[in-house]
Amino acid sequence: MSGAHATVIVVLGASALPVARRIQQALPQAQVLGLEGRADAADATYRAFGETLRGLYRAGTGIIALCAAGIVIRALASVLDEKGSEPPVLAVAEDGSAVVPLLGGLGGVNRLARRIAAALEVAAAITTSGELRFGTCLLDPPEGYVLADLERGKHFVSDVLAGGSVRIEGDAPWLASAGLPQAVDAALAIRVSPWLADAPHELLIHPRSVAVAVEADDGDVASQVAGALAQAGLARGALACLLAPMELMGSLALAEAAQALGADLRFTKAATASEAMLAQLPHAKPLQEAGLTIAVNASPIEACELGQRRGRLAVVGLGPGDRAFMVPAVQAELARAEDILGYETYVNMAGPFLPEQVLHCTDNREELQRARHALALAASGRRVVVVSSGDPGVFAMASAVLEALDGASDLAWHALELVMLPGVSASLATAALAGAPLGHDFCVISLSDNLKPWSVIEHRLDLAGKADLAMAFYNPISKSRPWQLGQALDVVRRHRGPETPVVLGRDVARPGQRLTVVNLGALTPDMVDMRTMVLVGSSTTRVIPRGDGTPWVYTPRWYPMAP
Ligand code: SAH
Image (tube, rainbow, N blue to C red; front, side, top):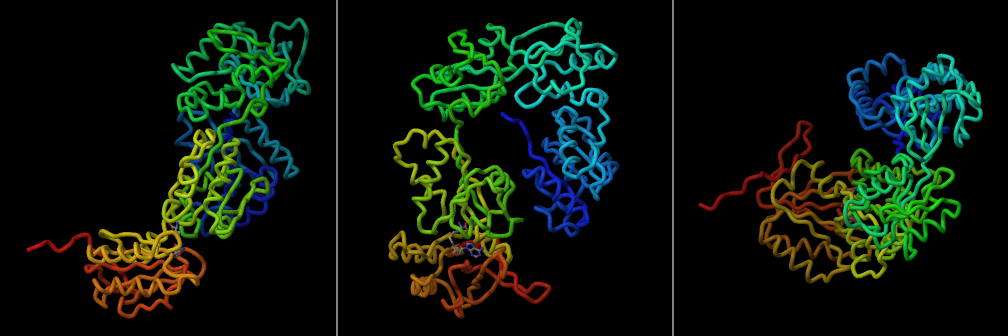
């Protein structure tokens, strides 16, 4: 697990945007956040600086603030005492002339500062003494290595700073260029080893070079693995990976165990995980401990060397259009997606995307085929997002994906991680614009007879009319379905008077948005197209004027009681 949280670049005004973009070129994953009304050309906007910064800090998100260091310090002061891992926080002068690492020494802030400084062609203002002396933070080893004990580490660094020389035991390639005072007979040693050790004058760093094959998920897997490692004399921190057979890809117990152990979880199609593990790590030393096979590699193990990960398929709702109406969980899912599938218009709505994100645009009608494609991609270990407009569960892709899954024979399809993330549906976005026409009982009906008989639609409209429900019509009309809306309105008119309010929302939350309020009596199909949402009121729905003279439409929460 990389454990790396996202990093954001925060700007207060438009004047800082050019430097923010230069930093972003060096850190393409970082999003630029701009103050609303001042830097709207950023990737996303925020309202309150202090609150935003504190929220990011608490979430462990790295912060690159293009403003005075003092402003950042004041904003974060109240949350600095909260324990937890500290993300890197830097202040960068808005003209790019200074890069000041402030917090997150163990979160790699100096490394980040150097990268930004290199991109801006200035020097980073590094103030950490150990780092200045040795050019690297001994307590923040690179990816693939972990420090055994922070407190001991701090003592060790003070000892070296006080003039001690060191010897390096084991393989520490990143220290080769560090200006460490080295001597073969030094009392102080930096030991790079996956094995447990208890030597007071040593800085112990574990390479994440151990993998464990897990064949079953019964019992407490985390304790079993931890116990086996301890018996073998191996450090928990050295554990990089658990490898399990593909049949266990859906196992929650296994996922929790990997998380608790801080290990990546990978899966193999081979008959046994241990066989696959030893085949994929041919130079590793195999051990048998407490019924588990352990592989100790000579160097850190990259997760991608072993099997595949459990893929994830998220079926997300983008909301009606404007990104402000897209829920944050969907935004986060899109940001980390590897493959994005959907109807071209919606995929475009979900962007911008990074060059390495793969877009699969298809025609709107190929829904089942798109669903199968998404499942196959996710089953191979990829992070896949299928996009729908509005909510994915309302006449959209969530059902299509479950339909493709229903009865499918491929085990991996059933074992992948499948989530549906909701969105603001067109009926709700339109209702909010108009006031509260759906404020009491209502129903939602698609007028499309592509996938259901027209007789069913008429029957449902008739019953909904009888039941005095307000109604939301999706897919009200199209070139290939020109007469259906007129006929639907005839059915509704059997139960509702001509004065019944009707709301038409066209391109809601999109450019050119149009809201129209008419009476049922005056409504004609030519006022409606396939980009329109039609809301028909119930017998209690009312229209009142707004301050600006346009109408509010609402349905009260009460209903007349029988006498
Ligand atoms: N999953 C979508 C609905 C897909 S059906 C959702 O939850 O909103 C497509 C129909 O939804 C269109 O024919 C139109 O009636 C309606 N619709 C979708 N987006 C809309 C928008 N932004 N404005 C108005 N109507 C919209």
